[in-house]
Amino acid sequence: MDDDVRRGDIRILGRTISVDERVNAPAMAAGGLVLVLVLFLLAAVYSSFTIIQPGNVGVVFNRFSGALKTVGQGVAWRVPWITQVQSYPIALRTYTMVSRADEGAVMGDDSIDLPTREGQHIRQDISVTYNTSQEKAGDVFRSFRGADISEIEATFVRRTIITVAQNQAGQVSLTDLISNQRGSLQEHIQETLQVEMGKMGFNVDKVNLGASHLPDAIEKQMQQKMAAQQQAQQADYELQRQQTLAKAKVAEAEGDAQAQLVKARAMAEGNRLLQETLSPLLIQSKAIERWNGTLPQFTGGGALPFLNLNGLTPGGDAHAAAAPLH
Image (cartoon, rainbow, N blue to C red; front, side):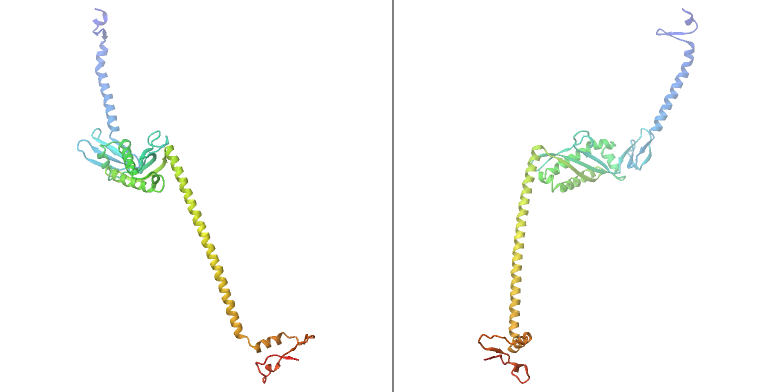
């Protein structure tokens, strides 16, 4: 036996353990236990609270009793490994499915496939804005067993939006879907989503139908149809314009004729009144007013007109006519 073993060292499995190492073993074990305890306490302290971010409400769930309560933003205290805290949005949150790779909830073309009443299919961008409330947050927690909102969006919210949009679009023609009935379709989707998501504790604030993406063949057909409709509308407009112009000309002609008739009637009435007011005395008076007092130098062998002035005197005949002078 060598000197080390004789001094009290122990050889175990080919390794010699000194006396000093045997003496320090309990201290080392105690130090390790203290370290584990400190780490446990730190983990317990860290797990005893959760920060509820602004715009969210927290749901505190007791795993033993099954009790639920909601708390506002800030620090939510809980018993580690006994209670669970989950937060849900009360501020508006938008879930988007679009064709652009960097804009939707999922990378790549995430626009949804919509069937039409004719059986054709298009790709449609859509976004849904929703939230919950402090009163309904507990319903959300129960409905999804405490799942995080991102997990709920990736499953329930996404599937519900697609299903409702496809069911509603299947009742609409392709022309209406991309034109004049688009707003009505959007309203119907929102109303149905409100019912379906409301069952789980969510409130739908707004549904927005974005760009519609048509297959090349359908887009060409739609362009041809729209061009034909525009031509028909232009022809109808031109017809209405010509009819309006014709009516205007007729009205103008009728107005001119009416004006001529009124003018003729006025002239006839004026002539009638003039005839009624003319008399021999008035004619002779007008002649005297225009006579310069000079008799004609040559009469041509005929009778010389002579003015009967008796009609202008008090004793004369007012109705005497001019007598010729021989």
